[in-house]
Length: 403
Image (cartoon, rainbow, N blue to C red; front, side, top):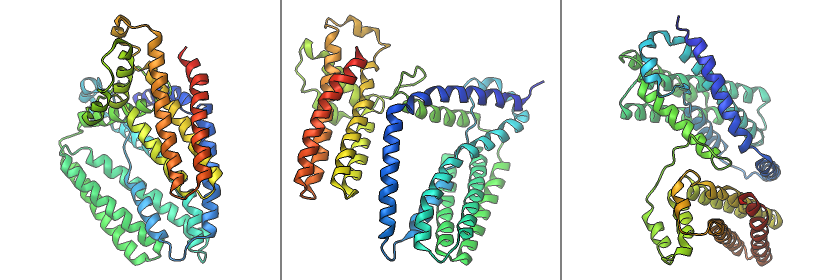
């Protein structure tokens, strides 16, 4: 007798075991220290900023857009696998309990985002509207949870529609209504909030009617979305440990590759070329490096204290090198590298040299930000400290890990 409820419990157990195994590597001591530093610094400057909150700050727009996007992002985690396209499709009429559990699981794992955001917005809300008491904000949080459930169910209904254009139009309409509703709620205009809520309910019921007209579940779409979400998780985990399930993506980025082609065509530069082109075209190395530079640059630009700026510069330099050191293991399963007529030690030297150069570029960029404020002391300390940290960290920790 087929029991879809038992199937989901087994799938959930396997999924939990799989993700927790990689989460232990992601949230290691290095990342825990960085996160603690981030949270502490952000909390301090956020509290300081609230004491100087400018009059007329658009709290309603900021919270309305953030909460609207938060409830709109409601993916359904089905935990389906590719073999299900063959073995479960015949039992579709018995999968009710499975998908009900999937919806509950999807809601629960997304609760942490809601809790984090409403906790972060709480001080801003009360600083902008001191005349309102805590019960008003509590009601707002409850409404956020209700809209989250509605959007999750609507997303599930629309996953029964195969046409992507229909799903996109529906998603866009709900995003606009979600943002408008929470804007009016934060603004205190409950009449307009009621009108937009009624419009959302109309779209919600329309989604129900559309889903009922569909022939059945679009299994290939559900499997594809679940596979894409797991691959996104594996790409993050691959920055901290080896992930055999990861399917590497390759991008052309011809304009960047043309810069790499300037490396001399000599045997001793074989691995220099290989790891540079791997950094540019394979996986998320290049994207991660750029994102860390941008985020670190924003912290340095907006934080008022020069010494905290310098600490953030060194912290993001550390994070970039720590993430990029996985380049050394990127081609571990390719046996052709062992056939190269090149000394094995040149492989390590090529990666270390490339990490030096990446760290140097990032240090110079961060140092230049201090020029915008004519902070020559910060520029000098960041430049010298960054280059010194770059040398010590790569020659010490990174080199030891590659041995």
